[in-house]
Amino acid sequence: MDAFFESGLGLERFFNQPFNQDEGKGDNASPDYNPSQSSSSIDRALSVSPLAKIIRDTVNMADYDHPMHDDIGLGPSVVIHEADSTAVKFEASNVSLPMMNSLRRVMMAEIPTLAIDLVEIEENTSVLADEFIAHRLGLIPLHALGADKLMAQRDCECEQYCDRCSVRLSLHVKCTTDENMNVYARDLIVQSEGDDRYPQRGHPVINDPDGNGTLIIKLRKDQEVKLDCIAKKGIAKEHAKWMATTAVGFEYDPHNNLRHTDLWYEQDPKKEWPLSENAKHEEPHPEGTVFDYDAKPSRFYIRVESSGVLPPDVIVKQGVEVMQKKLAGILHELHNSGDNGMGGAGDEYDGPRSPDVDAGGGDNWDGFQTAYGAVNSTANQSAWGNAGGSTTPGYGTSYGNSGGYTGFN
Amino acid sequence: MSNTSDFLILKEDHTLGNVITEQLRGMSNVMMAAYKIGHPNVPEVLLRIQTDGTITAREALSEACKSLVLAYGQLETRFSSEMSVQTLLQHPEPVRADGGAVNGTI
Ligand SMILES: [Zn+2]
Image (cartoon, rainbow over all chains, first blue to last red; front, side, top):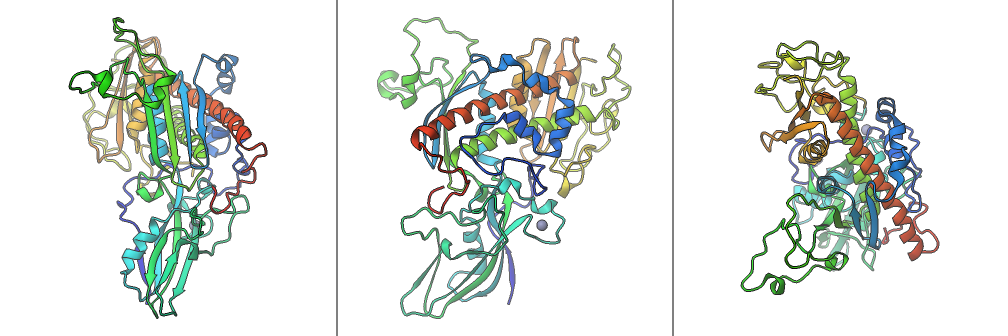
């Protein structure tokens, strides 16, 4: 008897996944993770995908190579305080709070990893129900190095799943002894043909000294479990099982000089609130300093702790990459939408404008727009032509093209 | 107003909306930049940009995105080089050069 279960309690595909555009196709990306490699990140972020070519054309790369930006003091700089196999703690300065916050959000929610998403159960005589096991399997951490190079399953040409968009694991265990048997993540056998560049991709993460991995189920004598698992690429925005991080520490202004927080106290906040360990890197404002209302934070202390599926520094790098691709998507849309009827003369225009302005529009936006698919061309849309906005590209498939975007996948 | 534009960014959220508006606010020829997410269940960001007229809102947005890509790029470059120093300090020989995290040590 076969049964199919979606593992995990995911919202349906509510969020379309912003995945890399270079997945699957012969990529000239770095062959593998190499900690000592530090190529120009923009080059890398922009060079690996079709998106890259578009961006490269639209964005003058000379801007990026401007020597000014290599000077310390202009642009972000980084000091790493601690780094090991599970966590990296660093300090970023000369960056804006929104930039670092977006990086934090992206590292927690939008780094592509692998997790079991579909379970085909052939035999289950254990005490746990099929869907219970499927859920447990979904939560098992799988090595995700190279997951970003996998196709998103919904974008793949295959009917259901294939080696380009998934990793198949099988589990077949039967207890034949009087003693109860533990089934661990190590019993999951990867069936898919792997990618030589990422030998570990899709394998369960096993960090305990016994080499067992996660405990999946316990079996009594004669109980048997036989199933196939399909691990797919996903992001934590869809389901937490795809999280690459556990905790991300984020702190700035440890002395509260900027007064972004109001410390509750009984007698004396200085005595009642112990300083954080980052406080040693900065000085408190001396007593009686005039408060600067315009001061903005520029030093951030970040600790990225990996869930084990990716090395922590890779999470940071991929976080940057995801952000860059988001931004590149907007740039692409801005540069392309001139051709597909973004503008033209809008009724509301009365002022002077340069001939190539076509994104300008009515200032009274009240047309309702559906989340997916094209914009309802109802009220007040004329000035913007179709869509009237930037569609972030690359995520289009399940909901069709949105906002006039024609897609690169 | 021809110096004002609304942009609707689909399938994005505060992650992008916040960073872009803040970047725009730092630009001298941008008078106003703001975004809203009308409903938490509707994945779209409405971004409004008003410039002083010397550039279009669209140019301003493009400029903001470019500088952000650049800034993130530099952040990554700095992070990577610091990281390789760190790895070198800890392990004189590179450990993960083959990318193969052996089971048990990622
Ligand atoms: Zn496939």
